[in-house]
Amino acid sequence: MTLKSAGLALAVLAMALGTAAMADPWVDNAGAPREHKAPPPAQGHLTYRIVVDKNGNKVSGSTGTSVFRSQAGVYIAEFGFDVTGCVYVATLGRTTRSGGVDAPAGYVTTVQSAGFQDGVFVATFDLHGRRHDHPFHLLVAC
Image 1 (cartoon, rainbow, N blue to C red):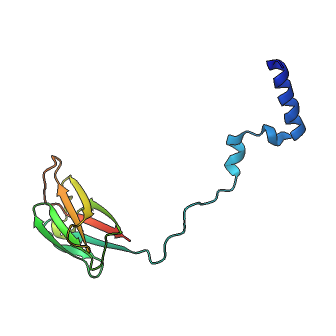
Image 2: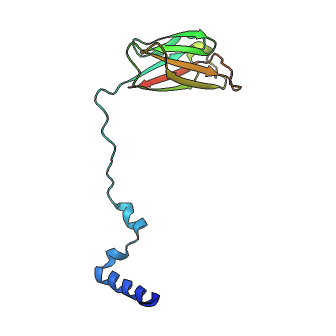
Image 3: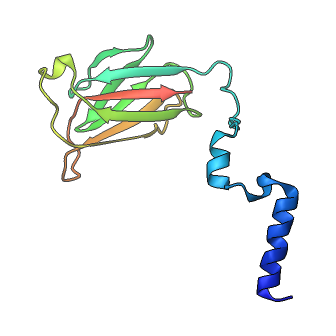
């Protein structure tokens, strides 16, 4: 079978099957119904938050939360329950107790606190990577 006759055979087959065989998948699939494949959220999903000034004082947050500053740029936020299976998200941000001005630029990291199942270790840094006291907001999702 030559290439020309193979092309002709495909064209005849497409005509026999109707226009669906010649449909453009990029156009016709755009209107196709989409099914969400992710599992539904787990029952009892909870989030907790704490806002901490640069001196390690809790400004606001969920009931039962506390924080202490162990050294420059190092904080332990405690939540009163085991947070080992949770997600921790922090961002530097001003608080009303840090002067009401924009916080200086820097970085923040979070990790499960060693020795405290109910704690999150938070470290804040200046732009040069040195530990530096910064106000921050921490969100814990379980």
